Image (cartoon, rainbow, N blue to C red; front, side, top):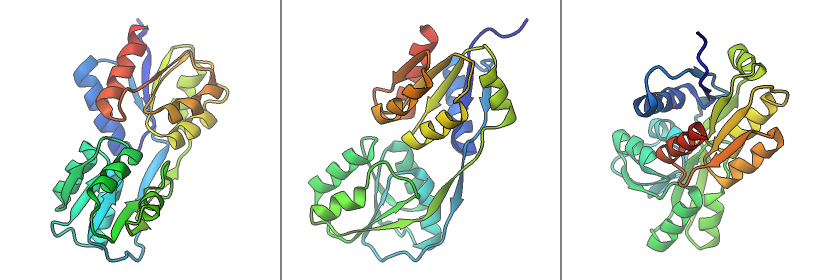
Amino acid sequence: MPDSRPTLLLTRPIAQSRRFAAAFAARFGEDWPVLIAPMQQIVALAPAVPQAREVIFTSENAVAPLQALSPAAGRRAWCVGARTAAAAAEAGFAPVAGPGDAAALAAAILAARPAGPLLHARGAHQAFDIAAKLNAAGIETFSAQVYAQEARPLSAEGLALLAGMTPVLVPLFSPRSARLFAEAAANTRAPLRIAAISPATARVCVKLGPATVETAAQPEAESMLDALARLMAG
């Protein structure tokens, strides 16, 4: 008998999708239908990196590329959240875990007033320009793009899922990932139940006319699981 439950569609890069799939299975059951179809690929870059006393990570994806370019050596690393802080600690930095989003991390740095210069190691796409915010407040902050988020088309399996009639659960973790998904799902037939990590991400999804959108209470994985639980209950 076909599974009548919604299918969880994960479009994050492969490592993050697998980790979230494991967290989803631990909470909701190993037998839930899940399709991993990454729409972004993380590619490390090797730019010239300015010297800085401390570093800023607004994504865990920046940690390994920066470590390869500039020794960690116990340098303090301001990290957007707990997951990024754990990656920074493993790489040899001394992390300070932020509250989960870049704007709030900027506020924490401004409150601490560290001696500059700082270095924001980032990807090509950013929803909030933390370096500009800190520089405007008098804290010298450089920015270096140490990885690229290369877009990938939705897989044939993903397109087939969206062309069907079974509801699809779609967690989206950034405005850019929402835009990529919205482009791929422009002609979808399947009822979409979207969990958005932020109001900005949820706004991108409006054009899709999803059956339901739930916004996470906090910009972190556990809150995204809570949002999915609400979608599944509804």
